[in-house]
Image (spheres, rainbow, N blue to C red):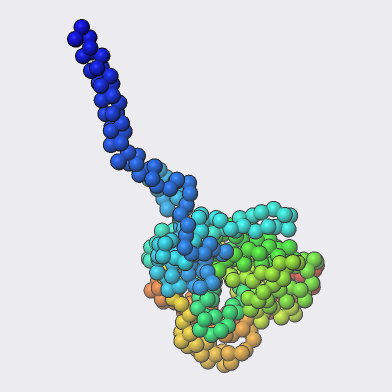
Amino acid sequence: MFSNFLEKIIKPLEKIAHTSTAAINLGTELEGDHLDLQTSSPAETPRPHPGKKIDRYGQQVDGYWVVGECQDSPDAYRQRIVKYYTPEGLRISESDSPWYTREPNDLSIITRDNVRERVFCPMQAPEDPSAICELIQTASQGNVDNFLTAIFSMGWVMGCLQAWHKERQTGDRSFPLLNLYGAGSRSAREMALSLIGSEWMSLAVSAKDLDREGINQLVKTGSHLGSLAIAIDSSVPYDNISIEELRDMIRALYHRDAIQLKSEIDRVHSGILIFSAQPCCGYGEDTELQKYVIQCPVFTETEALVPMQLLEKASASFPRFIALGWQSDGIAEFEQSLCHRLEATPETQLKMGKLADLAIVGHYARVLLEMANTNASILDWLVKKIKTAIPRLPLRIGKLSRQNSAIASLLDM
């Protein structure tokens, strides 16, 4: 009987002891990783960023940079990340940047068809300071004239990257547009835009023709790009925009003034590269576009100057480009040399553009050649181009006539 009594007491105690041990074991597990998961914030809730969300890619209003980078991962998947730079070209972390974005393609615009389209973020190669040297040295082995045209176009992009510094130092935000035209100009355009990122060429497709709708989309897109470059196609003139409208729009883009599109007001912060078959964007010299647009002819038909893999790597040297800043002394020296060689003044209006604007582009093209230790002279090339400018006939506003179409064909040869 006594043993039965003890059994009734001991069994409940063993049950309690077993339950208590289980509770202690559970607590021991929570002291590790499981406890951290319970007490930490949910993974899907991003922590608040102390800075501002970007409203443009590239250079922000205070000079800091926000761009994208493609990285190859072990599983062969190209990971896209966002990277940040100071105005001087020093790479910093997201937490140290006054700006942030959650993903590389986070901005969009509403098109005239009421469709939301993403604004392309330049995706760059992982940093490699020597990438630009390999690109230029390889290109220098090809056609000399096309090579220097490409270098000049790249100098224009380099100048665009310094527009923020120019405004701070001089109070002048203006920057010339670039009109590349002729049969061999595609290679020059590809090399120029490769400095910003290998996927940047998609912008040349997204920007439409140089008519009213195309310019409207260009302005909307360009307002989301800081100190970068966007390309637009201009194969022939169009009837739905008058020459006065075009000239006013080009002037506003040159000075980077605010532009009103219906009820919206936007300001383009990027450089504009116009790709056409003829000078003056195909509208003729009587439009006076040379005041705002640098005319850069490429009449030699050739294959690409460099392999595609080098174009994809060129943006790896991007930090070197933005670290250059606005080099006023070098620009002034190049302008003085150009004036002396042409027996001109800085205010001289040439068929290629304003002499002062040509000096800006020429100087940064010279800097690129110096980076690659290349002996070619961009000054000699520019003087030769200006002195031997091909005579150009004004084109009728609107669609090309048969006669002007024949002229355009001759220019493309």
